Image (tube, rainbow, N blue to C red; front, side, top):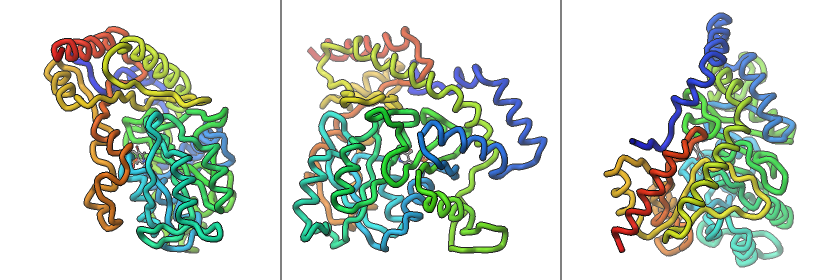
Length: 383
Ligand SMILES: Cc1ncc(COP(=O)(O)O)c(C=O)c1O
């Protein structure tokens, strides 16, 4: 039996009728961009993220970019970000006119390490003002990424940000409905960005994203910037962008957001089952960090044998993924920052050893047993 990495069809079949009638309403009203379906999704999503405001945009990349752009930092500011993330995290910083300042992650959680952030800031501050020694950029923000669905150490990063007068942004693109210290992903710091790319926990039927914030100012600017800097038709306060969400995606997300919490519960159950099935094998399993609800957008194991293991799985019809195989600081696009291999050892270890296993809410026990047994047989053959 082929075990897919992700199965969107089974989920779609469960909600097909609800989705159909919502999409039919969009077609009947001919309100294709923003409009009532997007507004009602925004209201619902603000509840999920525990914030006053949610502004829907056209993708997670747009969300990262626009939340930083809207926060009005001085151009060329340094923003701390981990190197083991999808490029859009650092890309959003650059698109907003700023400088990614890479700091390494924690070995267990693979999220920004508060200790490393603290020592970096201490090492490059004079009179409490940190300056990135690589680029000379004044450090004014932190963009924490909730990798694989586990919120970063956001409460601690909030304290560090306060101490150094930094803005804390959250890339919550992988962590819809997750919790850290009892608070929802999306509710920390200045603002958070979400992605509703189809493969995400809350996936649209195309591209989609959102910014959540408690700041009325930032919410207002994001709303304006996503629509050409315009508050009123043909009146432009700023040079903006077209980052509007399609009404079809708002309609789909409105339906799917009713189920997200139970789908994430099922992901958590599947993760627990993998932990049991894989125990005793020479692989590192995901570590939950203190008081968190990890929502397992991805279930990542680590092994130095991952290339061979991946091929072994693939030859036996078990799909797997790599998230992410090359850390950002060694990518050509970021070479101008002047880093080299060896600068961020934990991120580099993660990139060389991670393997993500099939994970979706409807994964069956039988499918998980096949995955685990195939991993087990790889290691017993290897001896
Ligand atoms: C951590 C992270 N940031 C940003 C993004 C960008 O989201 P999108 O693909 O919706 O543009 C993604 C999604 O791939 C992501 O995983």
